[in-house]
Length: 99
Image (cartoon, rainbow, N blue to C red):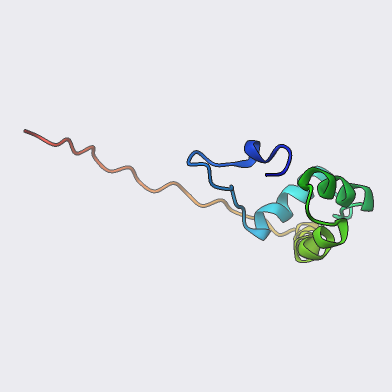
């Protein structure tokens, strides 16, 4: 197991996963508004070092689609598009089992 991997596990010990869109939004958040979403060579090298098995080039290749999606989302934001969050479903009554 890579260094720090235990911190990225879910409640049942499984790896947490996120969609490419979610990671793209995180990339936008880290870069700040107006900045070009990108990941530096040094950051890919850091990922490789923390992972302990994969190369920096491997991470760059895998995340290429994420950075492209982040640039697309940035362009949409710059164009004035507003994103509306999903509304919570109505909570239904609580059903208690009777004995």
